Length: 130
Length: 126
Picture 1 (cartoon, rainbow over the protein chains, first blue to last red):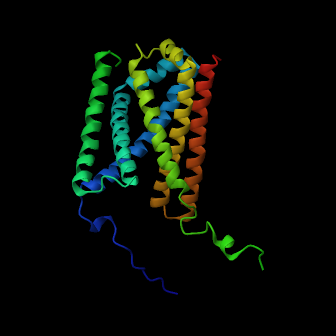
Picture 2 (cartoon, helix red, strand yellow):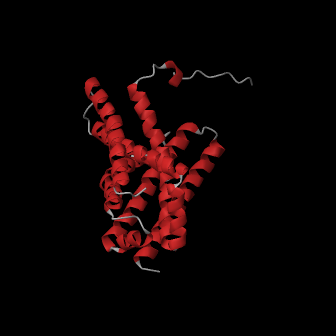
Picture 3 (cartoon, each protein chain N blue to C red):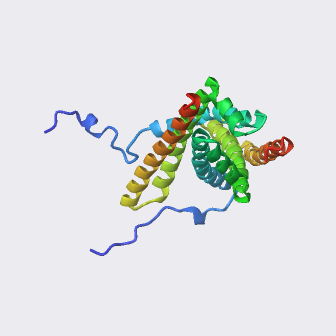
C-alpha cells in the first residue's frame, strides 16, 4: 500500500519570530545547560568528599578559561531560568497575560538575569575568589 | 469478558499516557528550588573562601548538609522531568525515545545518588 504524506499542523517555520517564543526557547536551552551544570555540581561534591588533592583538581578545572566560561554561562542560565520560571508560575496562577505585562516580565527576566550574573561575578572578583 | 468496568479499563490510557502528575511535579519542584538554589548560591558566595577545609567545614554543619541533599534531590527530580519532556518532544522514533527516557532516568538517579552519597560522607566525616 502506498504511503501518503499526511498533512501536518503548522510548525515553527510558519510563525513570525518574536519575544515570546525566543524566551520560551531560551528557557528550554538554559534548562538543558543547567542539567549539565548539575553534573558539574555532583562532580564538585564527589571531589570534595574524596580528598584535598581531588578537590584541588576540580577547582583547577573550574578555574581554567573553559571552566570559567562554563561557570559564567551557568550563572546566567541559572538566573534566567529562575526568573523566567517565576514568570511561568505566575502565568500558571492566571496572572500577567496582558501583552504589556508579558513583554515587561520577559524583558525583566532577561535584563534581571544579566544584572544578577554581573553582580555575582563582581562579588567573586571583589573577594578574589577567582 | 473482563470484570473491570468500562471506565476502569480506559482510565489513564489517554494519548498522554498520564495525567497532570508530571506537570504538577514540575511546578512544585520549581517552587521548592527557588529558596534551595538561592540558599546554595549565596552560602557559597558568603564563605570567606572556597578552600578544601573551609568548604568541608561549611558542609559538615548539619543544616548545610541537609539542605544540600534536598537541593540535589529536587534538582535531579526537576531536571529529570524537564529533560524527559524534551526527549518526548523531539525524539520521534519509538525505540530511541524509549532508550533516551530510560537513560535519562538512570543518569539522574546515578548522578543524584553519587552527589548525595558524597555529601553524607562529608557530613559524617568518612
